[in-house]
Image (tube, rainbow, N blue to C red; front, side, top):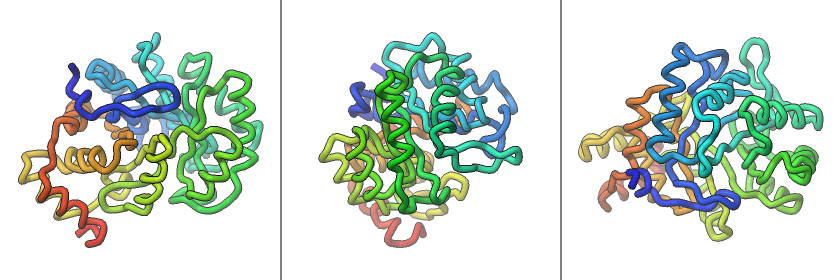
Length: 292
């Protein structure tokens, strides 16, 4: 039995995936733009992840762009039968690496076909529509038109399931009137917990929640409490942050990213980390204390 089996599993569409997966964003170059410094290491990370039992990989064709999906295909195609690759659409990259909205029917359709081609798939298992009204966080705005495009592509058999990313509860509720939403992917971690109520609501409805940036992403979380707990348990801060998320709710699916095989192994070992009650209490207070 793989050690990550200890993380449990949860439904993602009509597949059950292990709750500890892998996010491929860091396989591209600096700023998620261009090729990686070491393509061989990127291939090795993906192969190690799958060999370790990971069956949920998160990606997008705007990582690179195209680079990350092409590396996934080179490393893993033909894919294991149980591997679920989740991608996202609605953004494109400027020549300077900037992130630009790509919400039109033509852009969304092209993005789906780009993902299919670069991943070497006939259909995408899950496609997340990422809201781009504010690239830094959820902001209200109608997603009806782009979701209708994805729903049409779903009816044509190019997409099996649809999710949402960087969204508000209202956008989720509105979206579910257009099509089934199987997952929500938002910014959430031990210090940034605006989605606490949303996670619980989605869990009661059997909808997966995938938090990104478990340690703050591009602005790493500075938490003395997290570091102290990690030191006491003989673990890394990332392992503690991931273990806390696994304990937080059964519908949380994790996609920690790394471009290092050693860091990948450390992250996956979080499935084996048991947080004692006193550590949980300390960590639960991090948000209230402002990550101090």
